[in-house]
Structures are given as C-alpha cells and as structure tokens.
Image (tube, rainbow, N blue to C red):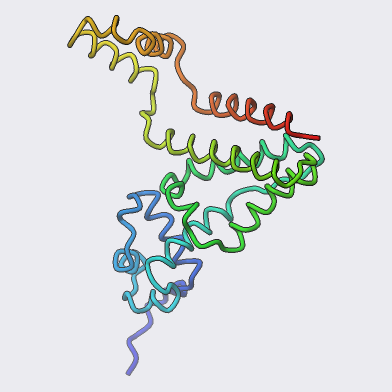
Length: 220
C-alpha cells in the first residue's frame, strides 16, 4: 500500500537542477565542499539517483563550469573595443559570483556555452577588429590572461587592499625600522595605497583599456 500523500510536490531531479545546486554549494562553501555524496545530501536524494544525471565528479565539475560560462553575455556590435570590453566585464562579474571557477575554466572539457564564448571572442577580433589570425590569437590570449589573472588576484587579495597595505607597512617598520630603507619602493606603494585607496573595478577597467589600446596597434 503506497504511503499517504502529504500534498507536497517534490521538484524532479534533472541534470540542470543538480548543476545549479553544485554551483550554489561551491559559491557558499568552496569547491572542496563539492562531492557527489554531499551534493546528493543537499538535494535530498540518494547518491545513486544523482549518478543518473551526472556521470562522475569530473562530469559534475565540467557541468558547473559550463553553467558559469552560460551566464556570460556575448555582446555584438560594430565597435570591436566596446564588444571586447563588455565581454571582459561580463566574465569578471561571473568570476566574482563564482570565484572557484577561475581555477577550472581552462582545464574543463568544453561544452556549448564554453565554445560559444571563445568563438565569439575570436570572431570579434577577426571580423570587427580586422585582425589576421596570428594577431587575433595573440590579442585573444592577452585579454583572457588578463581576465583570469585579475580574477585570481581579486580572489586572494584582501577586500580592503589599502588598509591591508598600510597595516603591513606599519607592522614591518615596527619589527625592523631598517626595512623602509632596504625596500623604499615597496614602502612607497604601501603609502600610496593607504593614501588613495584601491578600487578593484577601477583598476580592472583601466588595465583593460591599456590592453585594448595596445591591440589597436596590431590592426592592419
């Protein structure tokens, strides 16, 4: 005899629901918290039910990265700089929401969203910027290296860099006053950060503009 109905309808488990739950788990608790058993527990299912939709841990991680790629805007337009700027901004925003993803993106098996993202970037440099393929590859690697590198730094650096730099400078000079003379330029940087502050977004956008201006020189 079947158990009496409680009147509640459980959302059926599917691959997208499992991937969204895994992304949320990584966002909240870090990538190390993501395991098949832990995810199954969060979804309220037995692990075998999860394996019907996700083959293994590698498949799960690839799917999570694909979910992040799907969030990135792929703007189009006639201005190649504006297009690449919007693309880079959208990628950074996605990596700020999901900081764990930056370590997996270049090593994951590409899915449709991943392929669309990379294809659109090359298409912009080839068609809108008019770069020959060697220059387009060079420019593309330069932009993506900057995006991923900045995301890694932003993930590990303290939230308030200015306060952290000033505190480190004060701590070092108290420990050994001679350090100020040994490393004058580092002390100069720490003082400048303490005086003017540091805005991640402003620095990101400024660096991106330098790169886009340099790529302009590669155009025929």
